Length: 94
Image 1: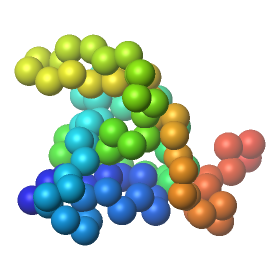
Image 2 (image 1 turned 90 degrees about the vertical axis):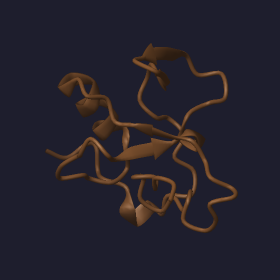
Image 3 (image 1 turned 30 degrees about the horizontal axis):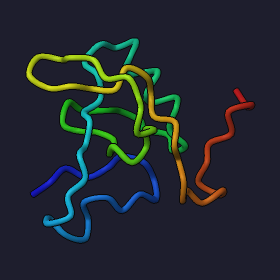
Image 4 (image 1 turned 120 degrees about the horizontal axis):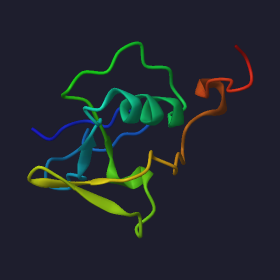
């Protein structure tokens, strides 16, 4: 079974395994992991090593870096289409 995307409202890999979308795991580095979490519209209390974000949330020409056996995006996700406005965290509040 393919991994599911952690972006709220994204339905990647929920409907069919035939149409599976590549899911990039959250970085193991705590600083990078935090950057990715802050880029998401939803608030994640904790992130496990098995959680990830599907490739639909990066531009097609995004810079990839080699991580062990796999390539991963250099920057946090930036395409968050389809996320309902009521589910977007307010970045301006503390």
